Image (tube, one colour):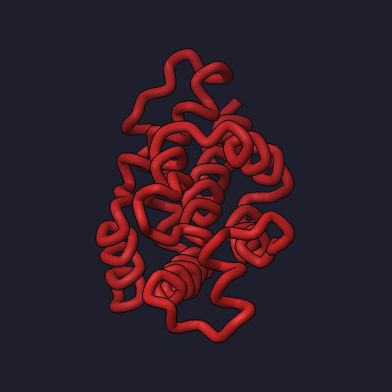
Length: 160
């Protein structure tokens, strides 16, 4: 594991997100389609997604912007937009799409669904009462889960 991947994984952990948390989201998305799906299958796909450089770059960029906003280190009006996770600010989703695209268009539907439902760790990341800014991180985590779900679906189709 190189320095970029190590840092991306550390920053996720520092912000309270584990690969197991993301695997839970994958399970949520895919359990109805794969009756024999295990959490280990989900985790394996999450690990593969996390090993991609594009994903690591998105993690580093998004978390850094969240942290800067949390500390009040961005200039206005960007500071207020990111800190409040303004509804019309779509750059956080655009960054997430760079992850979703890795395994094809099925990732978009997975991402859209999980972004609306906000199960598991996503509910926590969207809780504004924690004092933390997760404007980018919630979308990145959802996108990793969507990409891992897409990877799982592609691999399942390939094995039939």
